[in-house]
Image 1 (tube, one colour):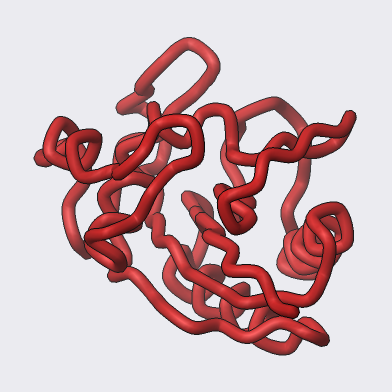
Image 2 (tube, rainbow, N blue to C red):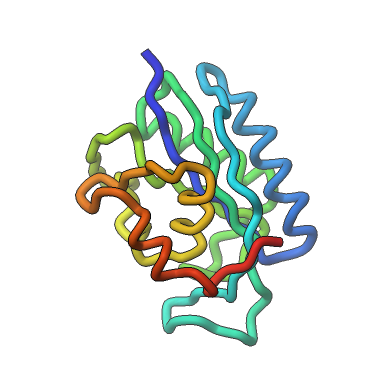
Length: 162
């Protein structure tokens, strides 16, 4: 049985749109996984550990929905392999990157391990996740929060369609 998963993608280095498109194409090739929905690509200011940093390159972000037969940590490993193939370097937390791929939800389940927490603990606080997700699916729900509609309305203007 396949589980519906929401995945966020972002890039702020190099050919940003190309990195996102390549990542989605590779996600579609993960065994037992099928991309079922796409959000438009949005642009946002860089978010760092100290907050929004307008001096950093801006991000392109999107959200996709997949159905997968993989367990959460198996999916995480597959997504990290794609990040590595596309040149992702982990020099600093929340640093600049060619590609970032995060699991936002895994069905309506909660999951926690040393390497993965689902739903993503920062999802509700990220306009660059919530707005594209809402555009993709107006009935979307974030486990523990509920419908994301009110969150999306609060973030209007923080991201722009690109």
